[in-house]
Image (cartoon, rainbow, N blue to C red):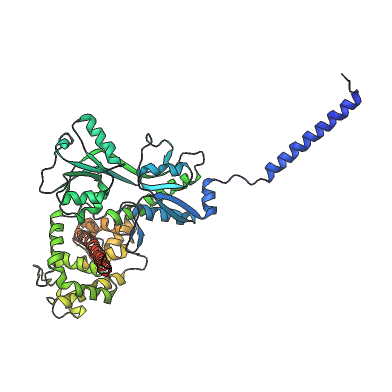
Length: 479
């Protein structure tokens, strides 16, 4: 084997050392010149889009007559606006599609998910924004089970791939006779309709879903609730990068603190739990046999004032049950129950004349709404106008002052409605400009009108849809 001279060996060693140094320096230069890795939050902001997985439901995301709506839609849109990006919604059919988050196809999930850390180990949940229960639903006039151990005596149907099944399985562990049918071709609303029609004994649904649908199914009741209450939250992938998740956590905490979450819950669920099922049953009947006599008048008054005619009709029902001859012990009378002084100020000469009464009531509620400060936005503006219509503008202003003193927001109905009842307490009304008032009355007034309005909107939209379908059938060629 040949031997290298020490001089040659030294030269080669020196050349190798220089080559290694060059490689190290080049590597350092590449690292130094490479842009830092972007966080998830930075990537979303740079893309200008927040891609969100949700589901079509009245409790989450849906398309209404005025565009997209739903508590998840409103919350996510506000979160996206805070980030300065657009919210892009993708809908899922059931929770089996959650793996799209794991694959990075969506940034977050806002679909009314309950916090279940054992089931979904790859999810990271924000603080909850709502608590719901699993409710056993039956029809009034039937004999519901008194407790979970008697469920086996009834025919139960639930949607496939829903959380209700897990709760029923827990019941069956304790009471093995418990049985049910899982359906794939029906929605939860279809099941409620079947119970109403007497085609099904029982179904299980989320309490918030039932609350939203209660005005439309006045014969339905909750027998009892099963399982433990569930906390609903947003979900993010459980990765090392928490930047977007932490931004969402801060957002949820902020809307809790500033009252925006309470306002949203009030907007979507504020009338739930206070709807009298018996009154709603009568209401549905009177929509058929009384409202048609006055609907044209309500529609005209709505066009003249810019107020939804269905809201005016709901006011008329709350005031008189659509009875133009109605009169109260205090002297208010007519279909809109106007006082003598209010009627005179509006130029109404005959309060028992339906046309004059409806026009007068519509102009009066418009007047109340127009007098409110510009800082009060819709829908709070409308709810407060209704309260002023009932209790008087001065008393509403007193309640707004009290709200401010109590560190609430005087421009939000969710806060003001908590202050109105205080007008009946000496401690509070002694320090107001207009004094004592039965403040609970306008709160009930607004709540009932919202119930009646929501039910009438739904019925009206269903009738319009039916007429369109009938028109299409008439135009279709004979086969």
